[in-house]
Length: 97
Image (cartoon, rainbow, N blue to C red; front, side):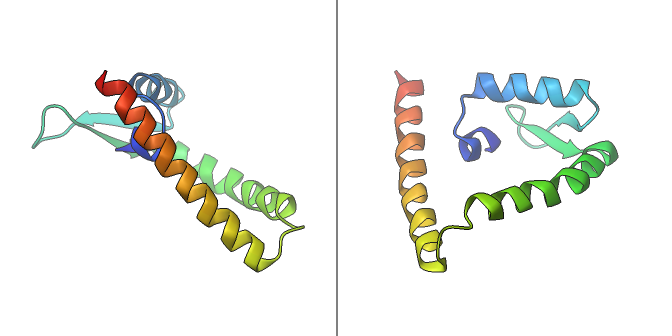
């Protein structure tokens, strides 16, 4: 589920989660209902990192998009959503091969 939202392969997701877990930012546990799934939980340290970095990320996002009008921003979001769907579909098709 997370890999789909990030548009990355499951192998890349596993590697990313390995790194986050080693750094103490997330915990993984087997899903009690579905053995194929893993439940990922953000740790207290992970929450602290998010609280520290999120304002900086949002400020950078605003800075980068400062030249866009609200209408242009809405159009950009619409177009990026279309591209994201296309990338996800292509990735899914590639994994099925």
